[in-house]
Length: 321
Image (cartoon, rainbow, N blue to C red; front, top):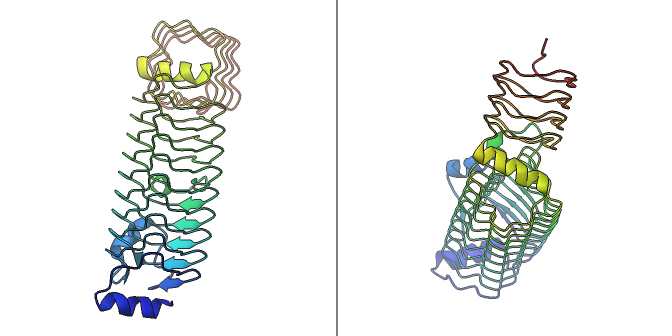
């Protein structure tokens, strides 16, 4: 079936297309509408496939540009090797759907049910999953990261999403937004969560073995019974409890986001602070003698009476004289 016939049947009031073969279909209103998921709100016309029942259908190797699947039933549907741009899946039922090896950009899944959905080896750019149900979803080996100098709001957004028991093994979610997300019992083994915003997220009983957490935001994050390295457990403790008067001699805090933390009177002598973000932190009266501060950032940092004797300040920003 081609798109013309499908739309004609929908126009006549037909909504039930269970098990239909629509592989290699092209759905296009207009290409190059923009380069951001917010452009969805500016689309003046859609290829409307909303409120339809496509359960167990086959969309393999199809292309979607400006398609609207809002509130449609796409349970058990096959989207492998698809290209999906500026498409609306809000409130759709995508339980157990398969998006493996797909390319998905500027698309929204707000409040969609994606429980047990498969996104293995999928490339996702500027995709909105806020408030979606992604429990037991599979993102193994997927790429959900943006370019290094992209805007912060171009990352994949999982705000308030249910990601309990989701699998992110070896996935790249650098700079991802996971504020208030539920990652209970999620598998993050070997995943790249550098620069990820995990503020107030729930990582209880999650597996963070070998997870890259450089500059991740742990403010308010729950990590009860999580499998996490001693280094990042210490970072979490410092971020959430402060470090005033702490004995942190020789500790490894390299590449951690410790912005705004109170280290007054703390002992950080001999500590590995390579690349640490100390912006707006309070280091007054702290002992940083013999510490490695290479490439650390210290903008608006309180350094009153700090002891920097024999500390390595190579590449520190701003320059300290």
